[in-house]
Image (cartoon, rainbow, N blue to C red; front, side):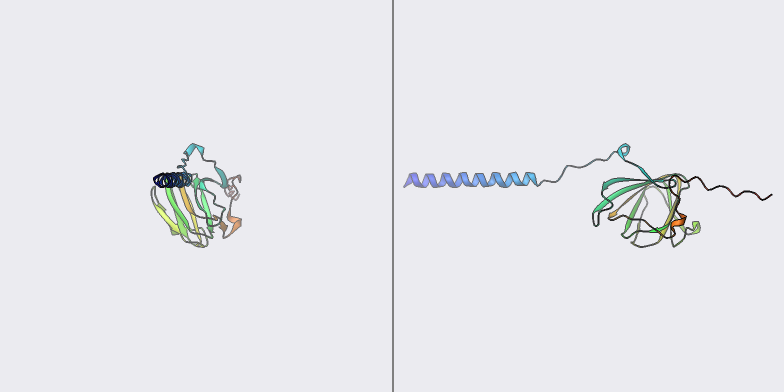
Length: 171
């Protein structure tokens, strides 16, 4: 009887040890992914409008409901015409000065100045416009899809467009 009891206890202990190893092994597989570091020099910048480039930092801005982080780099004086997004836009100024205004048309008198470290949230569908002072970089984060809907598409200068010609003096 003692041998049977000893065998039963041994089998139970081996079963418990096997179960514990299986559970522990599964927990290791479900552990969070390691952190992903994005170095500034590794960003892939794409021209989007005259004077402004866009780079994805994390996530996929085109996926509905998925978190994303992008950066917008603008040259001094670059103007972003009035537009809106289908989702909230969260903007942090990383470099330079970013001016933003609300409304259907670009109007410098309605702009707020955002300096390095400042943050602004643009609620979805709010019409807004922007401009950079100095070389400027802003970081935008939110949930996709990140789409730009231009209020007046004819105001958008493509990235390779020549600078507007100065008005010729009348002779």
